[in-house]
Length: 474
Image 1: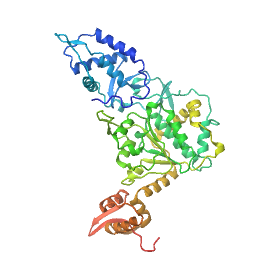
Image 2 (image 1 turned 120 degrees about the vertical axis):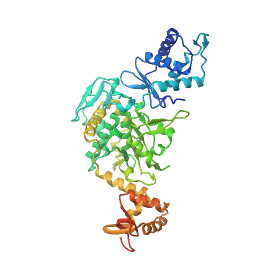
Image 3 (image 1 turned 180 degrees about the vertical axis):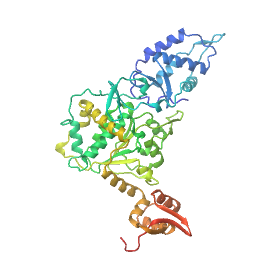
Image 4 (image 1 turned 135 degrees about the horizontal axis):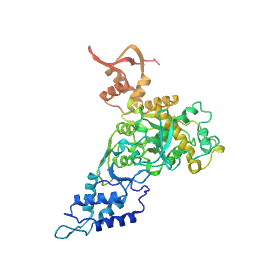
């Protein structure tokens, strides 16, 4: 059975289903008679009906039948699709005037054949880079200058933002949005850099560009204390995009294909709390960040392969662990934005995110457009020094091997350390701390993944450039 519209609960422009179905019924009555009434023949007829009803091409991609509604490519609701098939129930075919009899199984079969006929698996691989707004499509030249052009089906856009580009006369200074950002980073020496990164994150989301960066990253908004504004920022990012473009899948659920399928076609994936309920699978995490192909399925639906397009932004009070530790590949896929300030009670504004989205959405869009322009020129997020420190501390706290390496070894060009000697010290240290011990082969592999030079020759098997600390050595 074809997996039809994994996100069928999202709002749709196909609400005029009855009008479309009346049109479909007319096609059934007036078109040439069916020849053999097979599932394949019915699928071909339904395909023509859909194209007539939706005034143009209908394609099947990443589990959905899609049509262009004038501003974006929209998924046809599963119920509407099935009713287009149901209209053929009782229609006569062949010289003997046999009658088509439809049931659940046959309808599913017809839709499966139709998915093959209309298949366009690479449809969204040629998406035009830009921002799809209510009043047009924003494109950028080589210098990052934005220009508005009319909507087009050739842009291959799945979503359209609720704001209009260039329509505002409001100023950022003195706005609620400015108060939110300045309040989060008041007296922070990296305030300008952090706000710049948040602008680029917003730009990545409206572009749907996160995995296309030279160095794709998930963004972690980290605030150890409460009321630091990170959840308000996350709320504004979510509200900048339509509901159809946003998912809320925590990375601990990426390995579950029933959750993973909800990332199809999304431009932003967020979670308010990473938590510690389960460790994150490093391999699937990296694939989701970089947009490499993954396979997933909805309940009772066929598996689909797709390339994730979402920019991932997570907020948390403390950082979780990764299964097997944080190798260099994981570290390269993360950027941490620290929220160090607890906003004083007198500065807090109840419902500030909702007010910004209601009254200043155009300002937020302008903020994102500026970030998008920088991002397209650099193809990477701006650097924040405190992020590197936070990542180092995170890797050591979540990876017992890295923690041992930091605490129990010293570096030097002429130093050498046998693997057996290192593992002996590691077992002593880790056991005293109550850590779970990996096998020696896993231990050795983790050390190599940190970039240490490994040597196996002349009776020596171990690492070059470091050794275990001696007794009383700090």
